[in-house]
Length: 446
Image (cartoon, rainbow, N blue to C red):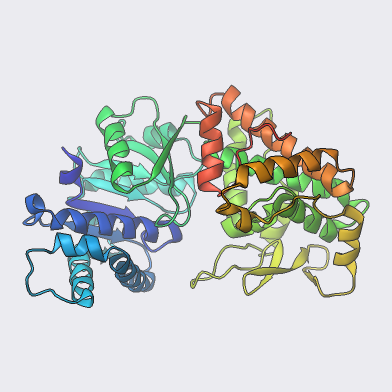
């Protein structure tokens, strides 16, 4: 069965969630464009969006309509070509409305998984919980035909384990979109032992259709992205514990967040990133990975304590950042959480922030913020010069930054040595494309 044939009936489980909604949008757009081609104009396509919460599904429809309009506006030239036989369409808004109408001809929302019975390609995008995923996959397996393919968005659970437990016989592939799926270019593709070769080829073809950057990872818990991110986060937490003796916990978190953002020229600090993902999600991924790495301690008491205190991070429905390790005002950090006091110490409270910065120092000469370097044609030269200055800087902040860089490089190297990643370029590619870093962790800077 070809990809075009499978695209005539697609399902998304967990469609109203953060990842599922993005996958639904991508598939809706691709299915609509396929139906606009001459050879498929008479096809009947169905995109079944399944979730347990009917109210959230209604919200999903609003999101899809808004995004479909934006997609049409950005691609008006393509739509004029696709609708060239529709003489009644003249103005841009008419082409946009027609595309949105065609987009919604495919959409079916439901809380009933039996609606997936005719789906030939099913995306699973529920919570990062192995038992939940296995339970759902087993149910859908009974509903669908034996030729249905499954693409799971898990970011850490071994695909072979899901395959074996759900009894899918090689019909499931890891297809890890990065958040948000409609914007992020990266997809980690995890092909387990025994994968149906047709599904492997389908995954590659689909990635090209969706204009994604596909990077393979071997089927090891955490894969490349979380294999690096979890250990990077745990390193930061270990450093906070060491700094706590001299500075205090709040100051330690502030220092490491500042080091990992400003001194390392990353898009956000490590604790901002953990908040963005969700502290509870971070904890869940650690729990998933930990049994697979008995020689490591993939666990954090601080993370457990924050989750117990309901300090979870993540995003509000409209996309704003929830408070986590850091407090946010207009999506910008404004304080640090103190577990002992069950509250936040704001940056503006006293002079603790200023004194902490004075003790650790500022980034060395040549520092340029991440955003300013992002599109700078001299980015490589400026980064090289900055890190040469960092190597010779003796401030406490520079020392911490060099140690952080060395550890990040060691994590990345171990992912290659242990066979998680097939090459250094793949590790660097995930951090560059999935985390928007300006440089890969395996580099000559340190």
